[in-house]
Image (cartoon, rainbow, N blue to C red; front, top):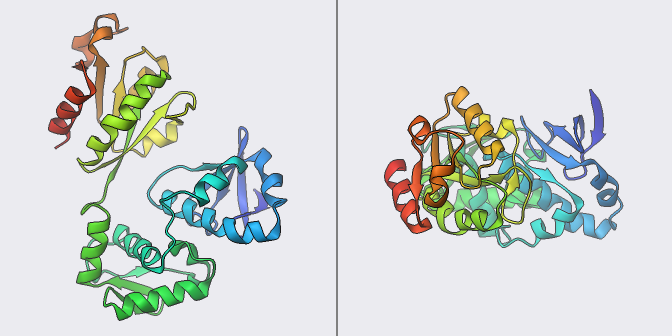
Length: 296
């Protein structure tokens, strides 16, 4: 196995080449998992000025850890760094950073008082988007003093109050991964992104809009992402062969698939309607109502 220096957490880790990317496996950015880095981005990131690295790389490490901990697959390039660091979703205040630790413990436990081991703590300050261990320890102490957290060595437990606060910030329930597969048509992906994904999330799913090729609104997908999903929604509008194939792959893994198609193209499908029984929709608003009824 090839070893390489992770630019974001400063560990020497195993990597696995995959196309134009390298998978970094099991470092502090993704303990027990992996993230992918564009191979041609390694040197540009490594050549950044020292101060810029100090300001940015620990944030990217935390971003990777949080998303991979939520079962998302991450591919980073040098062009992504600025948008990640400047995203409004990145916590800045101590309160918001502490909330990320509560959410991590919430994801890894089934109720208040259940023990979660964080080890080694010394390389886990990315759980709170902190630049160093000192800030993480300060945040832990503050959560303990606020009676949200109990610590026993490397073991952490949410109090009843801490659990409720974490549940509220996470929408009151753990969201299940869901993939929405659409054709590469830009208007279609915009419709799903703006009008339909928020409705799906309200039903307890964490939807990701994926297309065969990366567009402005969609992310290119791989089969391992499908295998880790709890639900697939396949929209056949645009007659994308990749959508047919990927949804069929999901069915082979016994993953539930909801088929949808715009009424304009319902009579043009490669397969008969009776074979897959898709939801035929005229407007995004109509489809949102139907999806919520089925998912609820």
